[in-house]
Image (tube, rainbow, N blue to C red; front, top):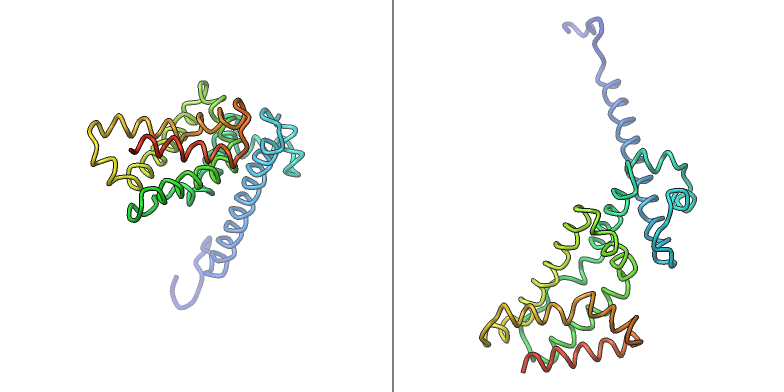
Length: 210
């Protein structure tokens, strides 16, 4: 290009901008559609349907079944995406708490946070565990989830754990006591309310830390 003349086959800057904007809009629409589909799956699980079909997900999202599979390929990918997004949205409930202050207060705060976390992610987490045997991707997500909760324990109760022998054993016990399986057993097998399950967890952790 010279002297302001556009060479044959070349595009002007405006044309490039228009193409880029159109591409950006397509990308944005794609992201919105994927989010609608993932949210639809999460909603259905939260509403008591642990095994939503692609047709049910599509209807809930307001899209066609082909659109679901266009974006996710198969249901395993969709479930994996839903589990990952749901856990990420509630990551603040897995953040380490301050290791300072009375240990009783820290135990109470940590157990209350576990209650908040498991009450909101419980249905999706339960489905993720049930489907994880046939899904390496879901297993990886759950391993990362447990690791984050373990890190929270190790940091928040670090001074007390370090002061005892067999730190790894104590941390393993605390991880099991405050994990999803224990919470699920208290809530859905032992018949505890969320409040009484939290109290039970606080009592158990307090005994372990003595």
